[in-house]
Image (cartoon, rainbow, N blue to C red; front, top):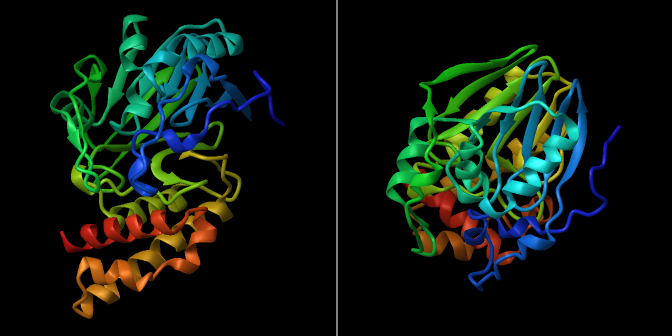
Length: 306
C-alpha cells in the first residue's frame, strides 16, 4: 500500500550530483527546485520513502521523534520538512548521511539549524570540509562546511528515538570511502545509499573518493546476509527494491567486475577495455546507454587497478 503526499514525481533522478559522470559528458541544466514535489511511499510500521530531486530519503517515526536518512538538496529543505510534518508533527531528531555527495547532504545545513543532529561516517565530514574531485570529468566540488555532520561513528552504531532504532553500518571503499547503510529492523527496511542505484544509469563508483567495485559487491553481499525475503530496500536512487532485484543488481556488478578484470589480466589498457565494450549486453538491465557503459567500464577498471 502506498500513501501519496503528492501526485507528481516532478524531477528527474539523473541530475544527482554524482550521476553526471555516468552518462555522456554533455552539461546538465540545474533543476528548477520550485517545481520539485515530494512524494512519500508508505513502507509500513510508520516508515516512509520520500522522493523528490536527488537521493531517496527514508523517514522512521517513533513515539517522541523521527530518524531521517539523507536530505537531498539545500533548496528543498522547506518542502522536505513540510512533507515529513504531514506524516507526523514530531520533531526530527537525527539525520543520517549515507555518503557525502551533495544530492544527499545538501539539506544538512538547513536541518542542522532546525536542531537536528547530523550523523555520518567521519569521511563524510572530511570530504565536505576539503572539497572533492570527479575522477572522470576532473570537475572540483568546493568545500561545504555548513553540511559537515555534527556526530560521527566508527564502523557500527545505533540511533534511538522512543520506539524506533536505526542500526548503522559503515561500508568501507564501496561507492565512496564514507558510505553507511541504515537498517530499521522493526519495519524490515534497509537504506543503502548509492551503493545501490537503479534506473537510468549505472551506479557511480567514486574512485576519486575511495570508491571500489569490489567494495560495492562486498557491501551488497552484506545486505543480503543481514536481510530476508521480505525486506524492503531503499536505494540511493530509483524505485523501492525487493530481494530478487537486489540480487540481480549484485549479479550485474559481479559480471562487470569479472569481465573488466579479465581484460586487465590480458594486459589491456583502459582505452582498450572501453573499446572492447565488455558490458554492452548489460546496458538494458542497468537502464544505461553506450556513453554510460563506457564511463562505468572506466570506473570499474580504475578501481580494480588500485
